[in-house]
Length: 243
Image 1 (cartoon, rainbow, N blue to C red):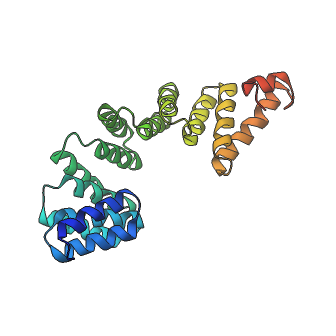
Image 2 (cartoon, rainbow, N blue to C red; image 1 turned 120 degrees about the horizontal axis):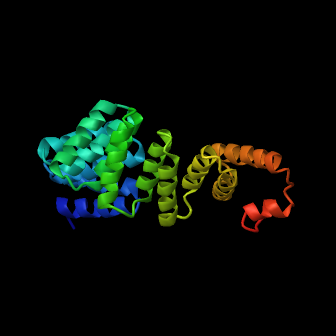
Image 3 (cartoon, rainbow, N blue to C red; image 1 turned 180 degrees about the vertical axis):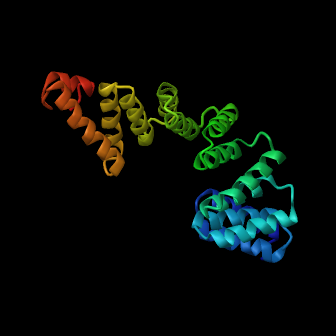
């Protein structure tokens, strides 16, 4: 039984949503073979290639989608992600700006632009865009985490801690949030709170080198400062009664 371009396109999109990348690329390629003027098929195949790590093919497909449909905000956003992976920062920023011009409520685009601003050293602009993302998606743990990193970069540790705490509330297994919050506590001189956070980060990500370094450094410093042993009651209190 012969299937239509629409059939292959829709099934390819479903495959992509469930992580079946090879099947998605096959079906979306069939959709394009049957209808070479489908911007949606090119856009989603470009996204599939991006997830596979084939940046060249992804860029070609997303550019073709935009030739066919120049008002396609999603294609601009996805192509900006490709340029970001290619470390072509100016092109990435140009595309994400275009996505937001077409769709000012595009929360993910604000998040991406914030990360681009941060990478280029425009920290205030990054903080503003993370805020714009959160205004549209208040349950975005990664936006809280990354805004916290931006505040921490500026030395605004109390605000950073607030954002890391929000990120943890939304995603309790987010080891990076505990680790970064520990760093902010450390800079504020709150060694006990820093140690608790580093310990939790270590419990969640025991093989992360930065987590291990922070945990062991704080461990040694707090033992030296407090003159306590790991078996002491004071040490156990720091861990909430857990060794």
